[in-house]
Every structure is written in C-alpha cells, then in structure tokens.
Image (cartoon, rainbow, N blue to C red; front, top):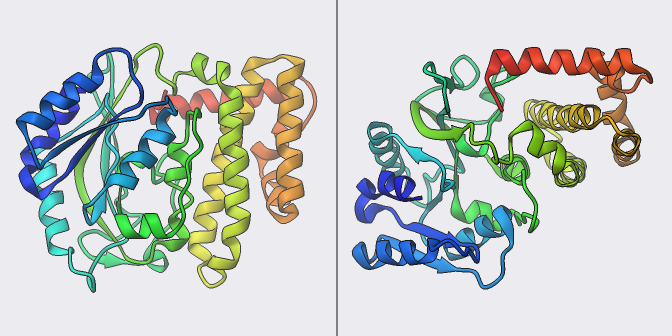
Length: 326
C-alpha cells in the first residue's frame, strides 16, 4: 500500500487520496493514519467498522470523495510519475462545470511478476486521442482492448448520479464499475500515456485461475448483475449503436470467462451452474442469448460432451497467452 500511496503523493494538494481500511487486521489503518498526519488535507484515512470487500471499499471512497474526478487505485498497484503529471494537467483543464469530462481513459501496464516485457493496454486506433469525443467517434474494440477499471477516471458527480452500486463481499466488481456507468457517459477523452501499473502474479490474487475457480459463485454473481444492467440500459442507448455493441461484447466476454471457469472446475455441479447462467441470459433477453449462441464460441459452450469443453478451454488458453492476462 505504501508504494501505491507514495506514487500518488506528487499530485500535492490538487488531489485527495482517500485510503479506505476495510476492517483490516494487519495494521493498514495505522499506516494510513500516519500518511494522513504527515500530509493533512491531501491524505484521508477512513476506517470501515465491518468488512465489506472491494466493492464496499470503492463505494466508501466514492461516498467520501470531494474531488471533481474519481479514480480507483488498488493497494497492490501504483501510477507512473510522468504520466500522472500529464493526467493531472488534463484534469485541471477540464474542471469547469460546463467543460467537465464524464470519463477520461489512459493506458495501463500489466506489471506481471517474472515477466520482463510488460504488456500495455492501449486504445490507439480504437478511440480518438487528445480531444473530447463521444461513443459515435469510437471504432471497434478488439478482444483484449476493453475498458477496465485501471483505464478509467470518472467524473465524480456523474458516477454518483447514475446510481452505481457495487455488491459487498464480492470479488470481480471492477467489471461492474467499468460497465454500469457507460450509458451515462457522454463526454470522453483519451490520453495515450502508460499511467496505471497493474500488479499481477501473486498466487492469492483474485484473478488467478485457481482462485477464480474457487470463487466462481462471486464471478457468476457479477455476471448475473451485468446481464441485468445491460437489459436495463438498452432503453438508454436507443440511438447509440456503438455503445450497445460495446456493452454487448463486454457481457459476452464475461459470460465466456464464467463458462470457461466452470468448464475448468469440471464437476456436475459446475456444469449445472453453466446451464443456469445461459438460461438466465435467455430469460433476461432472448435476443442477446440468440446472438451469443450464434457465435462459434457461444455455440461450442452450449454443446454437450468433452470435445466442446476441450476446444473452448484451448481457445481460452490461446487468447490468454496472446494478451497476457492472469
């Protein structure tokens, strides 16, 4: 956590660093309090009396945020100093009520342990650089170029007004954070700098495959909520086909990941959960279900037998190797 906070301190009094202690027992709050005492007016330490998990910590930060813009930085992660200065300069330019941005995007780097060549998530050739743009200006988001929590800075008021809620005691809520607010995002800006450093590779991290299989019910909970959110958002996106297409693809990816993890679990119970997930999507919106089923992977995921499972898992492994996640 110290590395994370230290990387943010160069922002000085132009930023507010909210450190949320989610009822920890490892001295986190004492460290946060020392930062608060050393940097009054810049660092705020907030202690939650009951543990609520990642989603509760993010919502606590949002509830207490006083800044114009809101960025989540996990305690494992940090930001690049040079890119940070450019981001803050941009935000200072767009801080007026009439010129505010709903979402600012930047690149992030997979800081994967044991890997010397770091994978960078960029959005060049997908969205315009260095100017205000809307969803109508966006191109096609290819596999591996989705907008994730690490990429995002939201306008605080927009995030509050849209009614974002993240469930407690649930991992993988970063997907909801990067999904639910999108129909309310009108003005965007992309700064092509490698700002966020996403640490990955620790054995007990939630994104590790073995951990995801153990926590598959939490992944499924997020998947179900995203299916609900997508259906509810469709009336808001009637004249915004590119956003509809993007949100559909994001939901499709999350559903594919859930399905693959259930295949890897391999038990009869897991296969039944897979069936129930696809049935829920069908009940929620049959058009979305048909579209997912019409694609090769969606079709294979819904076939019975070991061959389809082997093929789906093999495709997942190939994509995993190419894009370097997990």
